[in-house]
Length: 189
Image (cartoon, rainbow, N blue to C red; front, top):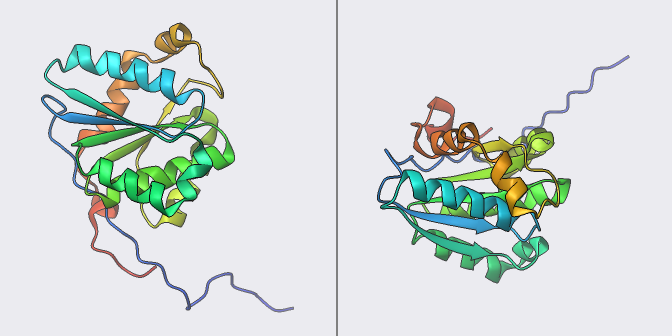
């Protein structure tokens, strides 16, 4: 009987660091990245309303992907990166199914590539999907789990589900300094 190791010495991937976080959201230009899922707009709307209450000097700018699969298009990817260059931080939503979560990580990756701190909002059940797709993208991309479920479009329901604790977690992901794994210089894995 032999032992097969799943590791390989070929095709090493560079691990890319995250963009340094901001000290505070006060006075920032906050990007809201809608990945095209039905629940994205109401979730981001509720988050924007709560952030505007806490940070009245903050401004907001939206980016809407018409359909989540559209992010596979090179022109759309370039447009997301260009948009992200003009905001101080970005919040993306929503990861609530396998491919939806995958393409949300792509969007957050393009935001980070633009030098903008990003955080993805995901349905609580899709944490492992987000983490594994972030590994595939070569970065420990940050995220916040939310109780908002797949396809939820009722804004009042979403407002009830996006609690102060959820908002505090989003703010933490955008302001907490990078840890060693997140700020490390790129190294081959």
